[in-house]
Image (spheres, rainbow, N blue to C red):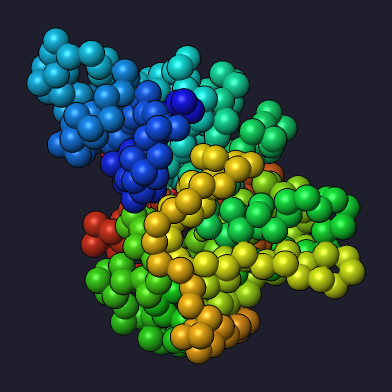
Length: 344
Ligand code: NDP
Ligand code: MG
């Protein structure tokens, strides 16, 4: 049995990770779960998966949960200390990092310190602390982000020195092809409506501004040890090619599939093996086209600014990421306009 701890179990990646674990319950077992404040969903997960330790960051809700579960064989902890305790739990082999934002740094470092494999979805951690995390643990980090999982799959069995460049694909989000003037009119509802993927609110907004792709460029730099000049963003609107790798002889290897996050999650949990996964398959007789475009760096300034921040290095990626986290949180609360996210 491989034992799993999930940071952010009630979110989009967290619940899809539990779907994968449910489908392979003869091989995977949940030992610890952590969430923010969604007590009811966490409680359902406890009933189904019987973890030994759970954490809620909301202290009041954690106290309520403790009382509701009194006498049961599960320990309830809370706050950042609780999240770190879940990340470092002795019994886990793999820690899935699926919380949003820089708050993932400390628990991720704790999991690495304790020798866990990390199935990493929480890209903001690498963007802001890649210089600390990668020297500690490149070999034990398994990418969950679909593009990085695709790149990782395309790199299997190839010598690192043969890599020429990474072709990081992007859907372009709901406002692909739109003008800067159009973006002034965007509402929260429009921005939350991603054409291909159903994800948590923060990454959905980041995908619409293309800041997500900028964060992914930085994530790729850390995960694969390449220079920024070796990463090219390519728009692939149908989200069928999840990314590609070009080798020094000009050969390009791509990873394709339907847009389904359970594929990269399962790959990370079973690497280097593969397991079956029910779901839609690509039907090349029906697939009429796979198209490509260049990103519009003028309209999607968030993408250009993110790449610039990455190239500048030092504290700049952290400053960029912190500003974006704050701006997106304000936009989600209706406190600023869509175009203020990148402007502010
Ligand atoms: P969601 O918003 O759906 O889920 C976030 C999770 O984090 C929830 O379980 C939430 O709990 C929990 N959480 C929030 N605050 C805290 C806290 N203070 N302490 C502990 N847990 C907390 O996010 P996603 O699943 O969409 O994204 C997770 C990460 O994965 C992000 O970094 C994102 O960029 C990355 N990612 C996501 C993809 C996707 O398809 N969703 C694809 C690729 C990467 P609660 O429910 O209680 O609030
Ligand atoms: Mg991605």
